Image 1: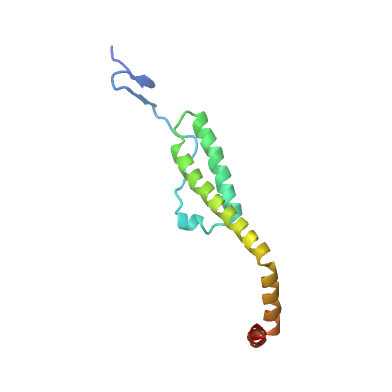
Image 2 (image 1 turned 45 degrees about the vertical axis):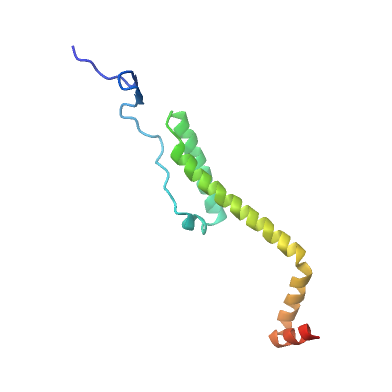
Length: 120
């Protein structure tokens, strides 16, 4: 009588294995951070939502979600950087509103008038 291996914990080897186990979703594509930095906000958030959905499926099927979590961490960091940059820009605009309004007025006059008005 031959012994057959069963799916589950192998006491002799001390590890857990799956017989012909397959991940329920494709492994996430590793995207270069230079590419991530230039994609649109819509594409960034769509990719994050897809990875979160896939990560949930992976967890539901008892697989390790590490690869999905790593990609999500990079995308979340990019979203955080963009949010901070946007907030800093809004602060800059509000603090320099008078100067920017004056500068745009001089741009309408032309560059030659801008230099004369700075001297006066």
